[in-house]
Structures are given as C-alpha cells and as structure tokens.
Image 1 (cartoon, rainbow, N blue to C red):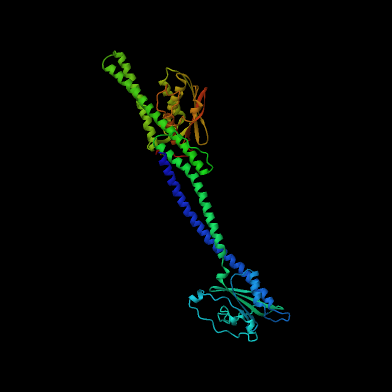
Image 2 (cartoon, rainbow, N blue to C red):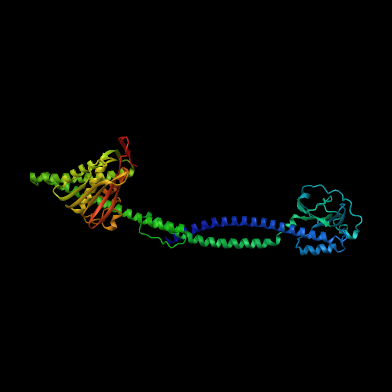
Length: 519
C-alpha cells in the first residue's frame, strides 16, 4: 500500500511538474523574444540620438569663422575618433553636401547585401556634380576598393532643411543634419547607417540567454517545491476519500497549511468526515431503534394473541389481552405513519391543504380531545387563548399533528404528574404564536441543538420512550410548509418551552381552498 501511494503521488507530481515546466518554458520564450525586441528598439533609439549628436559636431567641425565650409585634412581621422567616443557601432556612410548640392566629402560604408538587392532593386543613377574644387586627396571614396564615388543612399542631394531629418529606407536609416552658419543653412551632412548595425545587440545575447536559463532553473525549482507542498495535502485528501469509501470515517487531516484554499479544503473535509460519521452513527441507531421498536410490539402481539388462541387466559383476561394487542398495533401504525410522512417530505410528495383556520378554536378542540385520553393522569393543562378570532392560513390536520406531537413530548418530559401551559398570542404582523411550556426536567444543553435532527433521540429518552426520533423533525417540516416554523425557545431543569409560529390570513384576501405539494 505505501508503495502504491508513493507511486500515485509521484505520478501526480510528475504530471503537474511537466505542465508547469511547459508553461514556464513558453512564458520564458515570450519574455526572451519581447526582451530582445525591446532591447533592439532601445538600442536603435539611443544610437540614432548619438548619430545626431555626432553629425551636429561634424557640422561644426567643417565650418569656419568666415561662414563657409572647409573639409579639414584630418576629417577622416576625426570621424574615426568621434565614432568611438559616441560608441557608434560598425561603419556608416557620411557625405558632405554644400549649398549647391555638390559633394565636398564622401566616406563610404562597407558594401553589404541587403533586402533591396535581394528584391532586384535598380542601380542608382550616375553620380551628380561631384565637387571638382575638392582635391582627390580629400575624397577618400576615389580610393575605395568598392569604386563608388557617392553614397547609394543619397543618389540625389538632400533638401536644405533647417531641421534634422531621419527616415528609414529599406534596410538602412538616413540621417540628414543641416550645416548652419549665422542662422543660415550652407550645406548638409548626410549619414547612411545600416539598420542591422543600429539594432545590433549581439553582445547582450549571452547575458539574455544566461538570465533566461537562470530564471527558468529558479522558476522550475520554486514550482517543484511548491507542487510538492501543494500535492501532499491533496494526495492525503484522496487517500482519505478512499478510506471513507471503505467505511472508515474516523480520520482527521492536519490543517497546518498556510495556503487559504488548501486550508479550507482540509477544514471542510474534516467537517464532512465528522458529519458522515455522525450520519453513519444515526443510521446504525435508526436500524437498531426501528428493529427494537418494531420487534417489541410484534413480540407482545404474538404472545398475547397466542395466549388467547390457546385459551390460556379466561374470557375477561382475553379481552384485556386483545385491547393491549390493539394498542400495540396502533403504536406500530403510528411508527409506520411517521416513516411514511418523513419519506414523503424528503421526496416532496406530501400535500398541504391550505385554508383559513380559526386557530383559537382549533387549539381548544385539540387539547380537549387529547386531555380526555389522559384524564386519569394528574396532568394540569393551563390554557391562555383570547376570545378574539385568530385566523391562520394552514392545514387543519397538519396543525393538529404538530400540536399533538408537542403535547406528547411535554407529557413524556413531566410524566403523569405535572403542568402544561399553552398560550396563543400575536407574534408579528404576519404570524401568530403558540407557546407550549412544561415543568419537566428539560433537555440537556448538549442535546438542544440536535433535537430537530432526523432519527435523533436523547440519551434519557431512549430507554424510557418508544419512538423513531422523527416527531420534532416532521413537526418543523410541517410548520415550514405552512410558512411558519417551530423553535425551541429555552430548556432547563425547571422546564421546556417550544414556540410554534403560523402565518396569518392576510386582510381583504379572498380565501381560496388550495392544495400545495411541498418540495
């Protein structure tokens, strides 16, 4: 059995671990892709800003105090030095245009195949008006291995604008910065930069992969530990259910967990197990009680009738034996009737015939007839019923059933010598109240909360009073079916008080005889 439990728990843990690892991997992949995209965007934004700063410094470098542009001899070295200072990656093309659109200086970028070449783009038009006044020594493009004398990104001179222009063309960016002298634009610096160079974060790939792997390992470890902690109580609940299925209700799961949901699961499981154990105990008591209660009258009836049949007793005693047998059959009939009523309530098939009833008159009649049966006892019945008509909306037979049951309970509590007080009064604008008070020994405090449970009988009542423990249960169901209720008000060694509430007949209401099926 321990091996089976361990295997099942490992299977559950392995299943959830695989699911969470897959989810974690997908999440980390999405985070990685998003991080790379964001880092590329940040790198592009930052480097474009640096290119602008570099181009503005270059524009100042090629201007003189006289208000014209001059390409210094060290311009190429200056570009290389300031490129490193601004941390500009790779190589770029730089072209210096004068106000007339002549190229005064051109530094080419390494030629790389891009998307345009793969799409079959047409070659750029022939170069335009390359500045003849610029010595070839100041034009490094004439000595490049590529043999190009102008930047393909600028086949035509850019417009003379007083603002910085940045646009994206195919696989590269074009940055155009004006050269100003005394608030006048006398030329432009045009830079072409491959987009791949501006968004290159290859040096950070290793860091990103390392962080993702570390996050994945840490996340998997945390998930594994959490799953072990969470699946342990769930596994215990599963094993406990198996024990309950086998009929073992005496178990208690440990509730020392911090997770609120798991804690609630364990708490309510323990409550359910305790309730099931209680119901199982009630079922066992019911079977024992029904067996005992049915066997006793049947045994008595069989013995008495056999004595009469065999003429063991005289005729006068035979009549007495038959009367006793008749009373026992009535008791059997009452127990069967209680069971049938209760089962009818549970299945929703019992019918309540609602009509206007004078509660005061009905109450007086029921108590009078009931007292005739026990007129030989030393019972004192005290009535407090006002003369004013009290009309309720209920079933006459069901009200009588409730009242007789309460009277029987009071008599059982006080024996044949005591007092029962019954009063009728107005409880609220919608209900009348009938109180039953006796001076019996009362109900123990530990049993008061359970007296309306089905099949429940107090410890003091079991050996002294025959019954199935359904009287109060059925009485409360009947009261609630008539829009009322039955409540235990108080109970002490000095006596017990029950309260029956019944619904009033609304004023100005046309009373119609109704038959309701209680659900």
